[in-house]
Length: 492
Ligand code: HAM
Image (cartoon, rainbow, N blue to C red; front, side):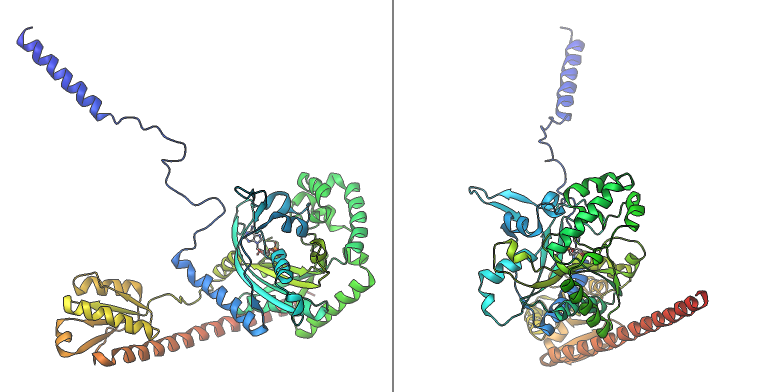
């Protein structure tokens, strides 16, 4: 072979070898494995920046529970599915399509991820002998619940509830007490709400009403949406709170459940309203508020934001009396009432109203150090500061003062503590006010006390400022209400 041809062949081999090398071998993909891990639809990470809202809701929940004597009872996330099926009813949306149900691995049991708390609270009441305690018994809890709902704004598959229950009293004053509690809860968070209230009577009176209702809907079937026609077969009461545009004309003329109440339920409901009037709670009688679960009897209620009054649909909280639940579970009859609020919806409403709680996790003091001796000293100083109750951030792993002070600035701390080689020799420390840059030198042994004092003073000043803002907002709301009233007077 001539020399030139040989060289050409060698070159070609090298190119094709390179070519082969350059092309990455095809990786056989198992579906989904190459994707970046992502959260499931309808569930949400709760990020550090959001925690101030969550902490505020938890704090208010605990505050109300302590003030009104609710004991905390946290039921498990898993229960026998049957508990919910028997309580809520086969025809309820939760049982029909929203409950996460699975067979216990290796067992026979059908398990559900709790879609709500109420049936678990009743189970626990009997299981742990609360029947022998002074009645009524008050429980509260909070945590995640699970419903396979269609994910959209304010509707999640894992969401959180704060839940209050009073078990063992039939008195209508308890109904009023719970409604007042729900109303005050949102007021405490700075949210103005409207209570929607109704009575759905006893299962017997409701049965009579349902017959009339079904006849009415059958006669007006053409005016119902397709989904409502389906609901009519599975759970006719559910058609009442349909939001489908198509059905609204038929719903406007629907027979009202209040006209079918038995005498006792009627008298009871009048009492609840009387107590609410006495307590100055404003409410809206809403005859279409039937709630979707079989266990409800008599008083049912929801808490809506004022915007929802104007047409939006998702309630912040819902509840009612459920005197039939225990019997449905084969337990001794029990009168009880409760409500749950959706934490995500509550937080969304706070955001919409620009209600920003203080951040209980935001660091107040940043500890900086310069040099190995200062680094060691800073380590023990941080521990002392922590035990004094100050929230700390630190730059222990950083070198140089500038990056540490820059970070302190970004974190928005009130004070930075500067511990350098000179301070180690002097037994002193520098406290820098991050608001105005003023620096003070204090003895190392007094630094914890000095910092705690300054942080407390700064927090009190901030609280006073926040209160002034709230007062100004309240005043402007009152003024606006006065103007609205005056305009209404002119138009009537
Ligand atoms: P509920 O009306 O089904 O009642 O739920 C209470 C609250 O949970 C609702 O008002 C809403 O704020 C929130 N919520 C419901 N579904 C979702 C969802 N998919 N995504 C986000 N938030 C949601 C009960 O659960 C009853 N156990 C209340 C009760 C207690 N009745 C008597 N005692």
